Length: 417
Figure (cartoon, rainbow, N blue to C red):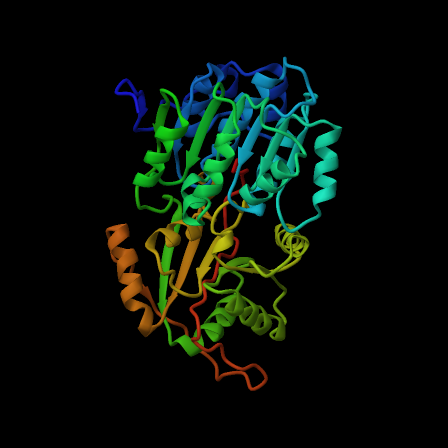
């Protein structure tokens, strides 16, 4: 990486408006219709150099507006070109994130003629291929399904002018580095590349040297810290009583909806069953659910049709739920960074929220690692008196730790992510 690398370490002055960013009238109109007037720090730092054609290596916290930071410059760059050929490629690690990026891009491209197509696994190959053949300008893809399309010659990457690797750290965590390298080999040497990530581990820095040319680095992360608007609460509870504790917390009016993380798919299913039997509207997202089921579950939760969304860590990144106020770690995550990503689903875009963690005796050592990562001890809250175990519902056993997620108590506002 060049020694001349420009480097933002702190948030740039954010007294500007989107009008100051020299965006096209079509983009400005779409942004204003979505209710935004001031860019977030990562948008203020990234959009001007991206419009100027610079490669970017950007890290910022989840919920900080990274998606619009790379989408808006791409839309403006493609607006004057020949429509209908694939000229921009955005690669994301999960289906949910690919869909989310597509939704944001479509909203921001509302006043252009540009077409955006999402391609990801778990759904039919044919309709995606047909959409590309009809003409698309931007493809948002997961690595595996993208390689399937390239192998079947649905389209080529020869015309790609803009390449984005989003959530790059998560991409590496999920073992996609070989796939990413296979994709990059098919890209034209002359292109603009932007790499966005929530964290910047050494492996990402190494990858950036392979992908980027004289990049501008934008570092707006507060390393190892959750967003400032998150209130963290810990309950000490026996593993066998975690389900009862969650039900007790849900009895009050403070938690209206919750994203509940589990460590395994089996635990997610069992927790959902427990909630269903106790008349709590619930949906599930994990790797054994079809894409249609996952999409339906997320839609129901966003629309307020269910009170709890139970998810494995597949949902810890890239799920954008407005006004999500509570994250419940039903089980302590094994890796401290996963705690940061889980609780980052709340307090997005400067909102506020609560992260609740259930810690059993056998999880104290794991949670101590998280506290060392945070640089502080989180005070234990008084666990409410729990009723006797329901005779009709077997308790959740501790075969595999579960992660629970947030209930809604936030400020109003929109999230860019």
